[in-house]
Length: 167
Image (tube, rainbow, N blue to C red):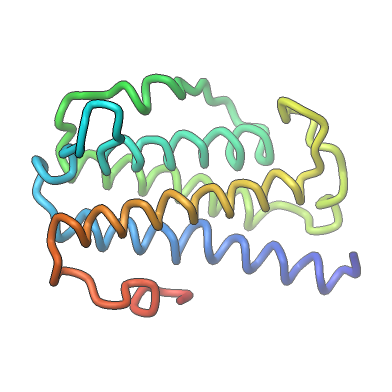
């Protein structure tokens, strides 16, 4: 990649990962009460709260730990197994912490390193692949959160993707 393309990719990924997608998630959390955040259609479905915990865990793992080489021990199974109704304010605080960390990591990351092998990745991957995978992964779950929010509160969201920063 040319340096300008590398920088553009990193800036776009950073905007999407730390501003736009979490903005959609926050918008959803803001219109739901704690019971709705932890509602599930059936026992094998994930609650919005579980998906938020999963986005937090995956971002801290892939961006903070792998790209930023920060200490973080993830409990992926715990993200989905959680059944307590963690309050919206607590979920938002955890999300804010993860996004601050991701923002710091991506702001400091040298775009010239995107094609280097990410040493902490579980399988051979470049930093570009790790960041790109997390971007797609987060977007998928943000979409699920938006869809579930619209099921729970039909008129609460209107083109949320256009109304969040970076949209």
